[in-house]
Image 1 (cartoon, helix red, strand yellow):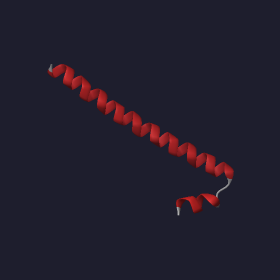
Image 2 (tube, one colour):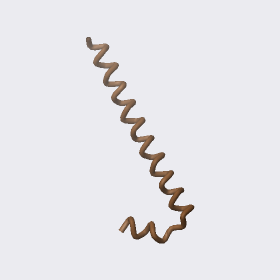
Image 3 (spheres, rainbow, N blue to C red):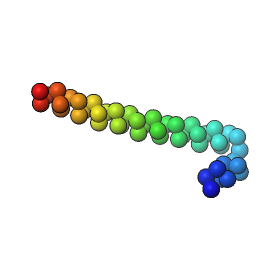
Length: 47
């Protein structure tokens, strides 16, 4: 269904949506990395 929707989009819209998806993925990765860093700091403080 998602792929068939993309067929109707313009190339520019497709590029825009793919860019937005990449940005969202990067933000989620940064948040996950930040949580890992905080957990590592807590572990270091406990030791």
